[in-house]
Amino acid sequence: MELRQLKYFVKVAETLNFSEASKMLNVTQSTLSQQIKQLENEFGTQLLMRSSHSVMLTEAGAEMLPYAQKTLHDAEICIDRVNDLNRISIGTLNIGVTYSFSPILTETLLSFMKMYPKVKLTIFYKPMAELMELLRKREVDFVLAFRPTLPVDGVESHILFQNCLSAVVGEYHPLAT
Image (tube, rainbow, N blue to C red; front, side, top):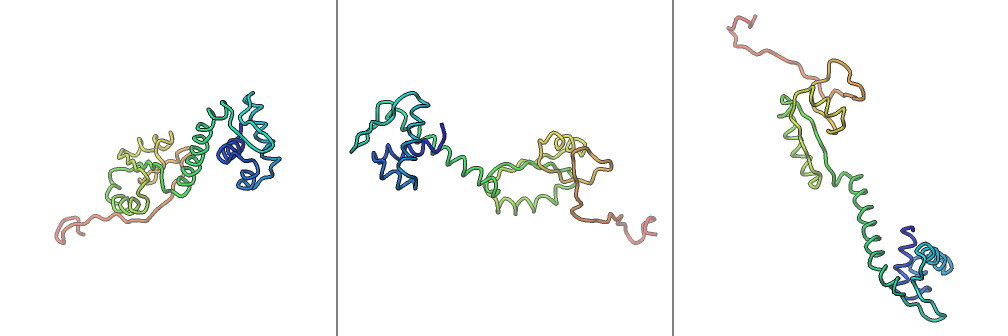
């Protein structure tokens, strides 16, 4: 059974007219008839009673119609959800962060949440070793942390910014010199 066949069946069942349904579906009447016949063969029962001037649903066709409509509706929802994921308008983003990077992440997350309000964010605050393990297991999508000193198999890292660490002391402190 193919979605196309269900779509054809539903359109004929709704219009009760092969000619009208074929025009609405932009297919030839013979293609439409052939596809519905294949569907009937697969089910092993007649779904439509045809005569030269009318079309009627059989008992099996009437029973199947709401399920076929629901299946087509669910298929459309499925397509919409995948398209939403591709546009990053829905989904879940799992982020691993070391405690020292928490302040940097906060402002960025607020901006992200405004841009993508339907994306669910899950933040994991953990030590570096635990975050690398989560990343290796693909339990987080990315980690914000200091670059690992040793390479981790299957993990790629990129430097986001360079920062110089400074010790700040008072002018007369012994370490000031």
